[in-house]
Amino acid sequence: MPKTDTILSTKSLHYFLQLIDTMNYTQAAQILGITQPALTQQIKKIEHAIGTPLFGQMGKKLYLTEAGKQLQTGAIKLLGTINSVVSDIQEFTQADKGNIAIGVLESVNSDLLRKFLVEFNKNYPNITISVSYFNRKDLWYNLDNNLVDLAMLYLPETTKKSQTNLQNQYELMKVTQDKLTILTHDRSVEAGKSYPVSKFLGKKWVLYPDSFYLTQILKGKLGSKVNARNGLNVPLTFTSTKEMVETAQDTGYDTIVSDSYYRLNQSEINLVPVFLKGIKKFTISLIYRKGKKEVPRIQNFLKEFKKFLED
Image 1 (cartoon, rainbow, N blue to C red):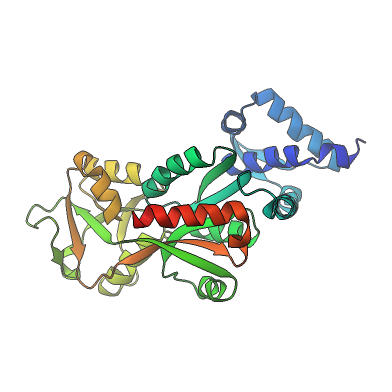
Image 2: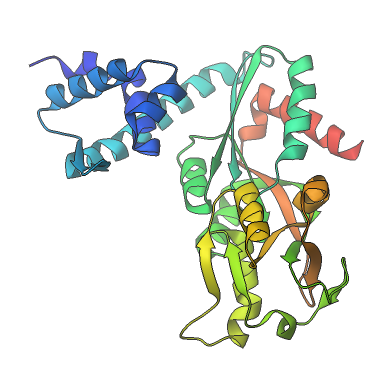
């Protein structure tokens, strides 16, 4: 049997986790920049080394075996530890080198961040920055396990655990304010105006999944006004804002986006943007562990980002 220390390298574990993310060998190989046979061979080597299958197959769909789930947990912790050690080594010696990993909540409009990263890269070309998008649960998991250095998400958070984490373990930088915008087919309303909840009862919706912040805001407002048993009528859900809006336009369904997303893409949207009365603005913030800003490259990043926002 092959030695596990030579098979279970950080590279092979990264391949393993990428396959879990897609559950598709072709897609995972494309993301990793390798061939599908090379990825398949790497997974088989890991399975041979530990002596049990990591993936099963039902029809054309892959699923994780119990052994695969255990290795997934261990791999995430191990890679998080390695990233932490590398970061510790670099933090007081390299202000203009190293990597910064940023996690972004899927429904957050990150165009402002993207524009800043272009400018930051010009000043710090030797700092590599990786940006990944997560649902809220996975974003907090990655932040808690030091798999990302910074996280961009909506505040206030809606869970007690997240609120406790913010108070005890994290610091934040406010980026911008935003607001829930309803995109409707109803031509009797005036764009940019606010309307009561009653105006939107009985409608069909295309929404983000329930775990998404904007969906929770909408359901928090409309939920008490609709049948508690049936809830909102949501025939279709998407994690992609673009696909959600396009589907709403192709059907008679209404949808929701952030106000900033609408403003950036209004030329491509033919639905009417309106607001719910009583909806407060929320803040998009950058969250990071206490002590992270003592790392020179992250300190530079935060300083430059703050200056960018002020300008």
